[in-house]
Image (cartoon, rainbow, N blue to C red; front, side, top):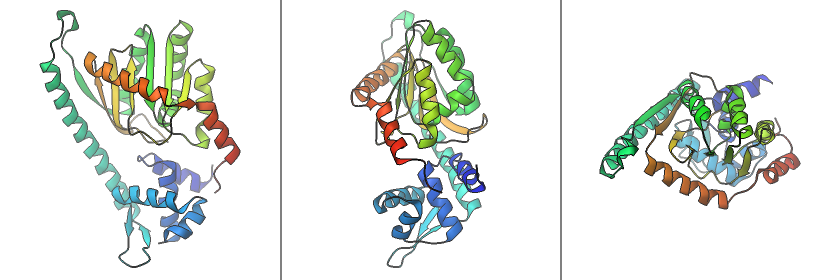
Length: 279
């Protein structure tokens, strides 16, 4: 891995996608640019660059000029990273708000005595996520459904989730993984999941949802899950709950998205034909 690749990977660790990290790095290294030369440098389309720049502006990492044509410049690195951290904090506050709303909705439901009281908790780091997920996999009975970005494949491979997943599948369990987007570099991790027996499909566009449902009973939904170069202490924002109503809602959503998806190998073949990103 080159120093440039390493820098971009670290940027992705702050919640940027690969495209966003490459775009910010290019502006940081080579100075302000208009969309057309920036698209040429990144080997992509002008419209694609416009979308990426819009996201980076929203994240406080890129600043547009008031001139015409518009020049886009990278915000100073320290300021940009502080902005990214503040966005994580905002996501956690949003998750806390969702938690309060779900708790209020749960109180309005008429649960059977055997259902008990639904609980909710916030997961704030990758370490907490792994600590919660592994025991659940060990007690799974029938199925595990996931609607996730490529970062989930990195977590599964890097922190020992995949062996537990394989054991569940070998014992007759069903694992369905719906990937909302992934890059050329993630192909080996996708195939690792296929090899252990997971049913993996792809849906384009990044539907804005990230969640996993265990046996239609327990679920984890996330606001921020788009990051790589993951460490156990990396911040994230996710909500764990055993609320049956919410789990059923997510299961229904998953089935709908699954019906719109395609075999992941079709997307892998497209990426292989395009080849790895040019430096």
